[in-house]
Image 1 (tube, rainbow, N blue to C red):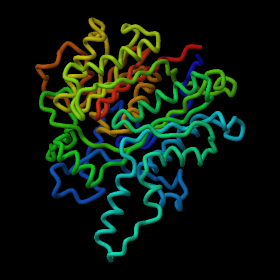
Image 2 (spheres, rainbow, N blue to C red):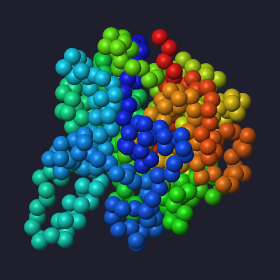
Image 3 (spheres, one colour):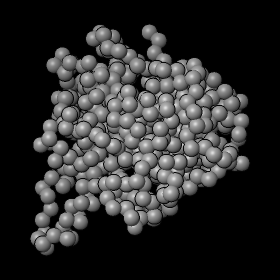
Image 4 (spheres, rainbow, N blue to C red):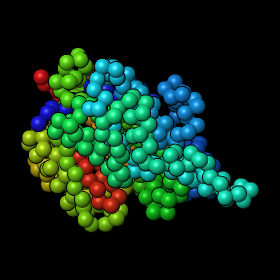
Length: 415
C-alpha cells in the first residue's frame, strides 16, 4: 500500500474564508451564527444560520463563470484555489491522467433549484427555465468544474451521502492513491443550503435550533439544553498525494491520512442507532485500517450536531470503543462554532483535525452552560476554551441521514 499525505488545504467557512482565518476562529472559539441574510426569514421558525460572510469569490473565480455557478460550487472553487496554491503543484509538470477530483455534497445546488422554480411560477407563464439550471444544480458539478479548472483527467466523481458526503469523498480518495491508481486527488466537500427550502425543510423535521433570541449560543453540543443544530454553509479542500510523489517535488506535508471507515446503521432514516452501533463500528474500522490502537488516538472531532439523540448515541459509542482511554481523550464538536455544513462538514472538520496536529491544540466545544446528566461528566469535551496538548493522531467522525457513518484518521507525519 502507498502512503498518503496532505499537501494542501483550503477553507471557506462561517468563521473564516481561508485556512488562517479558520484556524484563528477555532482557536478563539468564535460563533459563526447570525441572522439570515440570504432571504427574508421573518416567518420561519428559525431566523438565523451560520452563513459564509464577506467572501470575495471574484478573486479566485472569473466573474463571468460565477453567474453560471450555484453557491455550493463557488465555495468549492474558492477553497480549492487556496488549497492548490498552498500545495505548490505545477499542473504542467504532473501526469494529469493520474490526478483526479472526488468531491462531496449532500444536497448540491438547492438555491438554484429553488430560485428557478420560483421564477417559473411567478413569471409570465412561459414554460421556460434557465439553460444553466441543470448544470448549476447537480451535485457532481463542483467535481467536474474543479477538474476542468486544473486539467485533472484522472478519477472524477461526487459522493452523496448526506452529512457523511465529504468524509466519504476523503476516504475514497485515500483508497485511489494508496492502491496506486492516482498520484494526487483534490477532495473535500461543499454545501450551500441556507435557503427557504433548506431552513423550512429542516424546521419541518424539528431538527434545527429555534433559539432566535440567543443565536450566538444556539449550537450547544452535549449541553443539557441543546435543541437542534444550526445550519451552516461553506467548503473545505484537501490535496491528498502519494508520499513519494510529494517528496520528489519538495511539497510541504501537513499530516498523513492513515485510516478510513464506512458503515451503515440499518436503523432509521434520520435517527441514529440509540446505542451508537454504526458509530462504534466505523471508528473501530478506521483504527483497524490505520493499524492504530485506541490509545494512539489523542483527539476525536466528533459529529456532535447539538441534537438530543445524536450527541448521546455518539458518546456511548466512544465509551464502548475506547474504554478507559476515553478519559484521556479530548473530544470536541467544532459545529458549536461553524454550525452544521451538512455534506461539507467532514471536510472542514478533517481540516480542523489537521490544524490540531500542526499547532498542537484542540478546538473547543463552545456554548456549554449545563451538564447533561445522561453524559459522563468525567469525559473531556473541551468545553468553551481551546486546550493545548500533544496531538499525535486525530479521528474525525461524520454521520448522515440514512444511517451513513464515516470516520477518517490523520496522524502527525513521520518520514
